[in-house]
Image (tube, rainbow, N blue to C red; front, side, top):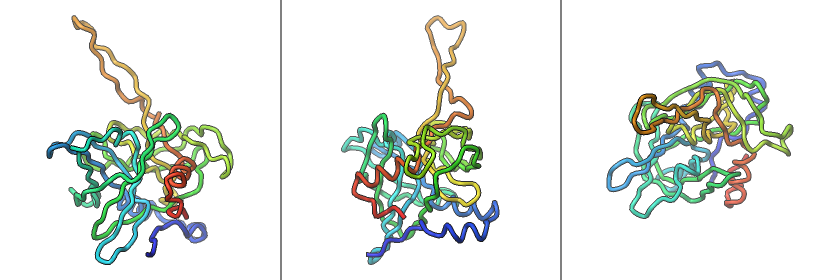
Amino acid sequence: MALVTIGAGCATDRLWAPSREQVIQRILPPSVQVVLEEHGRRIRSGSGVVIAARPTATRTECLVLTAGHTLHEMAESQQLFILLDRHRGKGTRVPARVIAQRDTDDMDLALVRLEAERCAAARLGPMPALGDAIWVVAFPWGGNMMLAGGIVSQLDGGTSEESDPSRLMVDASVSYGASGGGVFQASTGRLVGLVEGYRTARVSFKGEAAARYIDVPVPGETYVTSLGSIRRFLTDAGYAKLLP
């Protein structure tokens, strides 16, 4: 069975620099919305990225990476759906199943499988450098697709391919529902990580008889699961062949 990914082509990117519009057209199709339902009612939503597409006899097997905590402790009564082609509107709703999942202090990833008529896979990029420009594609609050720009603002250790940091930080602001969203190189459209979460600040309401508060995202402090963690996760789960 052939494996279709878009992992090669670094030399091509060096010889031909895509325009901003071309990069955006590369990163939107692989970006998907993750929806968890129970008895027909949405109970949780997140974001994800198609990392591989395998043609079958009649359809295409699509493998999606998302945040592990989005699918934490799924009950048997709950159903998982992936919304493809959301950049075109409401998209196509396809049932899916989890085939690998980790939600620990050092790993927050899940791999999901579905079959569809088609899907576009993202291309993995190199480890980003501090200050590299990035795009984030996600679905905050379970709503429409969001495209946010920024830079890599922090590297959590690691200065080479062999010591790839387990976590990055970018200054693009996100909110609830963005977990699992793709973080892409702005220069090439290659995937460099997935949104893991964001720092929050607690805002209290004054003058209330009972203590009330809300937790709001801190602008510019978005945590990203790096390609190093993605590679380790796929290798441990038995899907190292998905890597270029």
